[in-house]
Image (cartoon, rainbow, N blue to C red; front, side, top):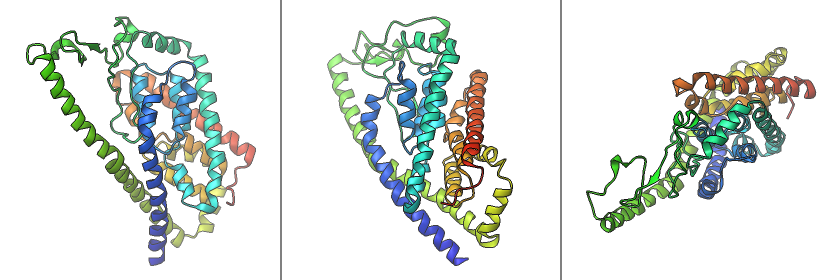
Length: 356
């Protein structure tokens, strides 16, 4: 039993090293992506699916927020969910002899997300036109946050909004209609918080500039040092628990018996993997990836579960009770596409687990 705990700790520490490197790299490139990525127009599914392949959970949450604010279409959102890799890439990289086996998984997820995104935009024409109409009247200046799963939101930009539209499409959106205040030159969601009677323009501007600069320094420290470290430690803790559980099961039951059980139920493995993928946490991608690496899941079952795994995005998707029908539609599309892809890939590659 001591060997099981020691092996679990060593494997988890290897993963921690890989996750830490990936996380700090993402933290460094996030500001540039934040300014560059705009999910708008015909390239929205392509851009969204491409960014989703990065090992993080935040972008799928940001996409959910953008979808609820009518900034992206159903097709783009579903494509992003299907392509989200979460922690699958670091898991495979922590096993150097098996790292390359993640490439066909990520490659197929990219193709699935891209095809599904554009196909659904052709099917749900009304939704696509509604988004296009809304964007023509709404300020679409936002920043993406890859590392902050809990705080996805549109970020007001210093550009004035377009003409405010009062049609149904725009009035039911949470997207803020911002304007440049004519009195103080700053952005306000509405003019109730206007500061024209409180401070002279120059003094207020200087005060806000200093306050913003101080807040930016604190935010940079948090973004580049603290957040990546906490995220890496969180993944390490999840992986350690999963490895210990797997190790204990393998120790008492035996790896051969586990593989034999999964092989005997190979025809329901894709469905079971999808059900694991629904778990709104990165632990689902850890379980699916390690089962695949250990030879417990076939390629089709692994791709099915990883397509269904969108991190904590589904939690945010169902937070708005008034849009429950639309949320259920998105969930159902991701679920059935994942199951269909899993069985199609299993039929093509075989239901048996690969001996990696």
